[in-house]
Image (cartoon, rainbow, N blue to C red; front, top):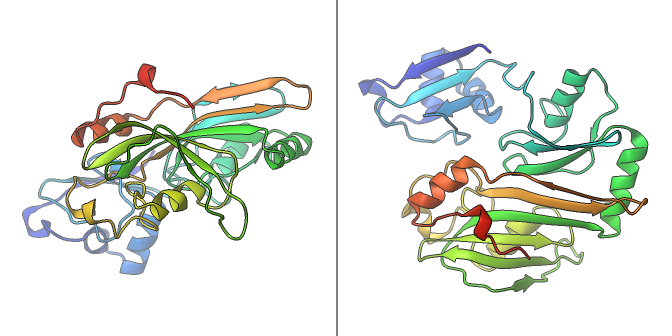
Amino acid sequence: MQKRIIIVPPPEEGSSLIDFLSRTLNVSKKNAKKIIDARRVYVNNHPIWMAKHRLVLHDKIIVFNESFHATHNFPILYESNEFLIINKPYGILSNGKCSVEEIIQNNRHTKEIKAAHRLDRDTSGCLILAKNPMAKEIIIQTFKTSKVRKIYLALVYGSLNAKELRIKTPLDDLPAETIITTQQANKKASFLLISITTGRTHQIRRHLASIGHPIMGDYTYGTGHPLVKEIPPVPRQMLHAYKITFSLPSLEQITAMAPIPRDFYEYAALLGLRIYPNKINHL
């Protein structure tokens, strides 16, 4: 994998990432922004997608070439003749150009494999792919009948103490329900287990923002929270598709679980929270 490693020198301390890349790579700001948006830039081993991110002296910048995702092998959580469930990293689309779908199609030399649903670019975790059109249709119909159980983990701003909080605010004039149980909380942050029975666009992110506890690192719904400037820089959108369970027409039940990402543990610790997988209170 081709990459360029750059250490931030004294004259560039405090520069924005986009300005630094423009000068260092000798490209326009427009092209520097494209490189950042393609999730090809890492700062101190963490992907950074904020063009205005301020650099610190001796930061380690890694810029990967355009084929960065081309041969990525995603952790497989479940596989059968019809389905594949992988652990999607954050920073990559579920389908479309340079997506999980495209990479797996290329790696397996078949265009039949399709993402059966979508996770947001910056959400990690369980993603189902169908190996043929019939399998994809089965998943689509299963989702429509609410026979899919999806559980997420999230770190949100502020103290949210909920044994079981149900948010039923309609989204886009459609019914939506998000069920939340707090695992840990302090004044700065809360670690949540979340279940959804509907799958509206950005449902979890919108529902949590609506009650004043947006997901950390959500730059669409969470930028206005007063704690944003009081806590350490967020490495990513802190939302992870932890577990998925669904039943097939044959009545076979399939379950997959994506391990809690390392950055969740590390960032939670910075906030004074401790994550113990064996102590998560499942819904």
